[in-house]
Length: 336
Image (cartoon, rainbow, N blue to C red; front, side):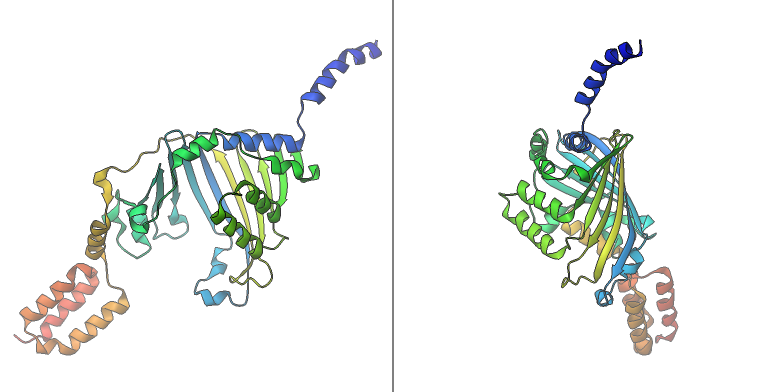
C-alpha cells in the first residue's frame, strides 16, 4: 500500500521539480518583472553603515566622518506611460534647516521646488514655498525624453549577463532570493548594454579604474516587490577622493502610487523672478553685517540723521531684526 502511494505521488513530485525555478532563474524573473512596471511607487531608505577616510580627507573642507550612520529616506512615483516621475525626500532628517525636496520629471522637463534650492544658501524658505524652477533653463542642458524610456521599458531588459555567472552566487530563503556580485561584474554588464553609447562607456571605464575589484554588492529581491542591497565600495589603490571605502545599505518597498502633477505656470519662477526673490530675502551673515556696522559706527558723526537713516533703509531688506535694531541705535551718534 505504501509503495502504491509513492507511485501515485511521483508524477506530482516530477511536476513540482520541473516547474520550480532555480535561485538564479527566480532572481532574473523578479528583476525582469520590476524593470517592466510602468505605474508604480517605491519608498527607499539608504544608510551609510561605515565610511573609512584617507589621511587627506580633511582637505575637502567637509567632515565626511559625519556621514557615518547618516540615513536618507525618499519616495519615487513613476508613470512611464505618461512620461512622469517624481522623487521626494524630507531633507530635514539630515539637517533641520533643510526642507522637503521634490524633483518632478515630465517628459523632457525637470522641475525642483524652489525652497529646497535656496535653503542651501541660508535664505528664508517661506518666501519660496509652492514655487518651482525649470532646471533645463538654469543648466542649459537638454534632458532625455521619458516617453522614450517608456518604449524601452516595454521591451524585455537584456539580463543575459546573469546567465554567465555561477549558480553559487544565487540563494533562495523563503520568499527571498539573494545574489552577490562584484562591482566588476556589474560594470561589465553595464558595458554590454551600452555598447553604442560612447559617453556612458567613458563613465563606466572611469568607474572601473577607480573602484577596487574587492568591491561587492549583495542584492535581495522579495516576492512582494520589495528588496534590499548591501554595498561595500572600496576605492582602488592610487585613487584618492578622501575616502578609502564606504558601506551602504539600501532597502525599498512598494507603496501606494500617487499621481505626479507638474507645476502650473503661475508656480514657475524664471531666472529673473528667482533672482528678485533671492535679493529680497537674502540676509547678511554676521561677518558681512559686522563689516557694515563697524564702518557706519566709525563714520556716524559725519552724517545727519536723515542721511544715516537713508543708508540704513538701503540695507533694510537684507537685515535681520536684530541687525536692524543695532544699526538704528547708531542714529543717536549722527549729527542733527
